[in-house]
Each structure stands twice: as C-alpha cells, then as structure tokens.
Image (cartoon, helix red, strand yellow):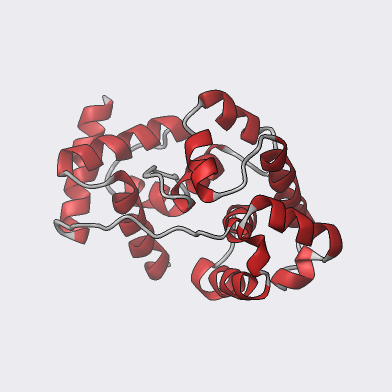
Length: 202
C-alpha cells in the first residue's frame, strides 16, 4: 500500500479513538540540562512516573545548567547518575557525549539547537553519538519546540492496531506526517496525543 492510503487508514483510526482534536503540541524544556537528560534517559523508561520528576528536580538543583556550557560545567565536577538518581552507565555516557558534541558545535541554548537541527548534516553528526538513533533526533527536536513525529513503541503499536504494516522508521514517520496533514493537526500534537493514549493504556 502507498503512504497516502496507509495514512488514510491511520487517520481514520485516530478519529475513531481520539476524536477530532485539536491536539496541542507538547511543551518542551527551556533548560538544556533537562533537554539532554530527557533524550538520554527516556528509552525504555516510564516517563511520567520515573523520568519527569527527576528532570524537574534537576532544573531546580542545577539552575546554571540551563545552557550547554553550564551543564557541561556541572558534569565536570558532579556525578550525573547521583544528580538524576538514575544509575545507568550507558545513559549517563550518552548525556555526556551529547553535551560535549553540542558544546563543540557552539550550541548553548534551546534556540541554538532548534536552528542547528534544520540541517541534515548536523542531525547526522548527532546520530554519531552512541545511544542516539533516528527517534532520538526527532524527539530532541520536539523538546526544543520543533514539531516532529518521534516514532516509538507506542506509535508503532497504535499504527499496527490501525492496520498499518510494520515499516521502517522513516516510512512510518511519513505515514504519521501524512495522517496529520489529512486531519489538519500539528505533527507533534498528533504524535503526543497518540503517545499519551497508548502509554496510559499500557
């Protein structure tokens, strides 16, 4: 089946289960430490119960980490696993690597990152970090105010329930983007609505 026909199938499923919206775009972070930790720690994590409270606490305890340089300074002297109360060596390493890469590229604020992600070469550079896949790239964009579809297990399950076959990441993202266009919804808003529906049902 073509992307438009699959998108129509998905759009019908959205309307049946979620109604006509509108679906507001999810809020992001203005604190770069929270942005970096969110994308680094969220895989296979209960977001609302486990990760979000830790990110809010990090913002309060490390206010100077609102910029990449400030966060990098904190990481040089303090243990992120202790600060986040999250003992996972690979996720901590991913956060350090993303921080260093952004700093080298002159990214300091959410606005900087928002603009930097406009370029495919920069997105590919970020993909070079261990633990950062295509979903992470779209997800971190949403955290700084872009409107993208970050396809995770919840979006895959929802699409499968709609009769959409198992597709590669980029293909399924395109189906969601086309469904959002058909329904007149913001891409990020539709993604977040589906994510909330499936995560609360899980």
